[in-house]
View 1 (cartoon, one colour):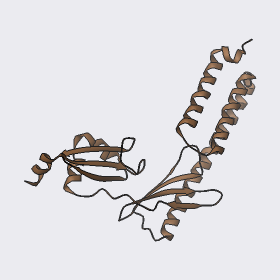
View 2 (view 1 turned 45 degrees about the vertical axis):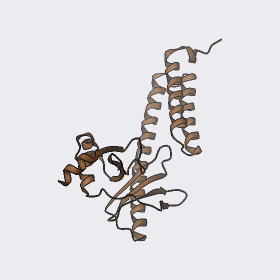
View 3 (view 1 turned 135 degrees about the vertical axis):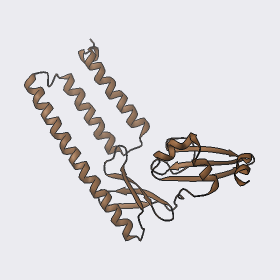
View 4 (view 1 turned 60 degrees about the horizontal axis):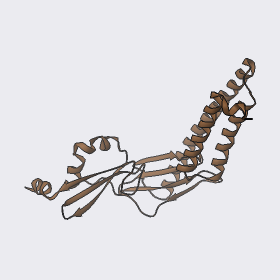
Length: 219
């Protein structure tokens, strides 16, 4: 006998939602095991509530809705406080290390609310790394850095191209790498918020400038 949960439309929708979110979580994000366990526990709770028809009565449904809204409000408030603390702690740690901050990004990462991705713009380039909030605050910066968007004729020519105008306007931490070849130069544009290495993917763009076009700018 097939359970009614698997045959009614609502049950199939819940199952599909659980399956798709689980696939996205485990297939796309290599996050910590604890975060994945909590996510699966939450989805499992939703499935069980539906399976046992919890909340079908109007009074119980109202109580569940109020409880869910309350929990969500508390969660959002805690995340806002966590974000403020993380930014202040990162800024303080950078200052203590003698790093002068021109611009700072402290953003959450998938799955784990207690880890932050960090990008700091200095006068010499972009430093980046990771901040862990628990069990105690730790800031770990990569040994290298990314160069600032250089004001060279080649880079200016690349950023003036209509193909990347939208990217340049959107990028908050833009960087560029220039690679010469027999046919000219290729300028790789990066936004350090999303990527720190050139290549295909989100947060990158590239423009090839031929030798003839380069020669025309010199003349």
